[in-house]
Amino acid sequence: MGKIGGFKEYNRTNESNIVVEERVSNYNEFTIPLAKDQIKEQGSRCMDCGIPFCHSSCPLGNLIPDFNDMVHQEEWESALEILQSTNNFPEFTGRLCPAPCEKSCVLGIISEPVAIENIEKNIIERGFAEGWIKPQIPATRTGKTVAVIGSGPAGLAAAQQLNRAGHTVTVFERDNAIGGLLRYGIPNFKLEKGIIDRRVKVLEAEGITFKTNINVGVNYSIEELNSFDSIVLCGGATERRSFPTEGIESKGVVQAMDFLTQQTKVLFGESIPDQIKATGKDVIVIGGGDTGSDCVGTSNRHGAKSVTNFEILPKPPVGRSETTPWPFWPLQLKTSSSHEEGCDRNWLINTKEFISNESGQLTGLKTVEVAWKMTLGQRPELIEKEGSEKIWPCDLALLALGFTGPEKTLSDQLGLEVDFRTNYKATNYQTNVPHIFTAGDMRRGQSLIVWAISEGREAAREVDNYLMGFTNLPTKGNGDLPNL
Image (tube, rainbow, N blue to C red; front, side):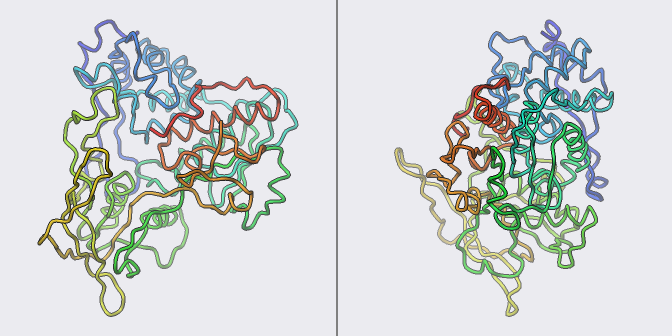
């Protein structure tokens, strides 16, 4: 597999980025692709492990050593065929996945792991460039109709798989464009929206119908929805987390997703008169995850006066923590390209108050330093450090605190049960209403794009079996694995 001893001959080579000063002046993707011979070298680093931990760590079960070998042999079309056999949208995961496969790469024990994610991205981009990505139109139709609610990665994957099985699929999206959080939750500089549009054109050519500005249960009746033979709910986990802090109603305290969504809509020509802007402001982003990082990058592109990031957890180690040894997902400091563009990062900080002036406009944040007390068998306890209070100037506070679960509009109107985590309850993706299925974040809670695609694929298989009494759709067999 790959080149024998290639991992000793070649070092890992990552894509480089356009310099900060240039890239923050626009909202375009800024990575500089590797040359074809460099990608071949990266594929040659695959070790042909007896047990490919990368394969088992991928929620999609991607056949990683196999497509690495094809890239090494410069059999790009074969690499694409292998990649697409398990992953509907490598152009999304190749840009946005945190790559659990790489964290469990055996080579990573002694060296830098194989650049799996970048190889994946190059395979699919070569496929589009060469015209190898063609619509897969089913030879026959079953006569069964399926409604997919939500056009994020779970909904799109479910729709494509069900269409391939011959069912007539309609995807409903409540926003004005297809893509879900891919469209409006992820900045254009991480995923240019033409990448989504390119894929949607393929799906339309395959026979899938897309309907936007349709909010099921609001401007589209449940009665109409139930006219479909089956329904797949892929609406995501969109209930945003807040926290009970004094002054949170101040003008200038904003949910991160509102900030990010508005920027993308304005970028593509929509008029938002009161757009939330970071220009010339002291910005504090509360939350240290990917969404917080996206807010940092967007604020820098707005021309913020300063950008500060708060995280209530301790600063992770630069290297892999001893508590998360290989091949587990590591507890490790992640510094994103947005952080590199300019950000004052602070850990073990808790916001105690949002301070505003007489007009209700945010002017500052009061914080306190904290520590975590760990007691065996008990929940961690947050301890405030006495005398550590501090006032930070702030005109715009962005809450990037994640999501608590799916909205309950559909579950209430459809009579669906929810589980103890408030997600839509399902067994093998089937809810308590037999013809209704659910997948993605709506079923498992806030998770990764790669998990959403996997969920959509697996749910489609269950729907096909329900409608036809059998199914030939592929499976990884991970229907009810816990949310890892």
